[in-house]
Image (tube, rainbow, N blue to C red):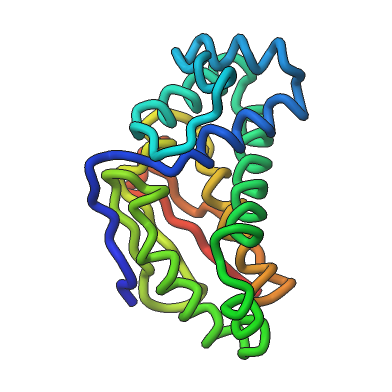
Length: 200
């Protein structure tokens, strides 16, 4: 089921920056976070959080600097926390309460289909110039090709925990409390695209 393809001018919603700052500060403190943002060339975003779409290159730079400073495991933990915070923000401010109520009343698969249509319609806000689509079959699989996080550099392990945690938190809140998301493929380790498997 192809619910949307993100092909934009390469801009990303500011949550990708602001929630990463929150996650880093909570885990590593303000000084370490400031150094990472400075290394990424984004120190100004800590002084005044972006309120508009940001160039996707900034998201790539932030993840590159985070991985270089913290190592893969700690960077992944921060990225996942930022994804969780992003989903909580969306639930609090972007997804209307009546829609949330309806999704929770539906059985999981119909709820998942409706949620995926909404995600696909807004994919440009998180995939930038990359492509987002839902792959056919089960388990449910979401694909992001050419996304900004995987472009931060090669890795032996998947690096898009931000997306995995965002999807997982949304699905647990709106589809099934048992939802779990795994990044089964990642461009950073040489796969054709980043693929996220969702099970519940």
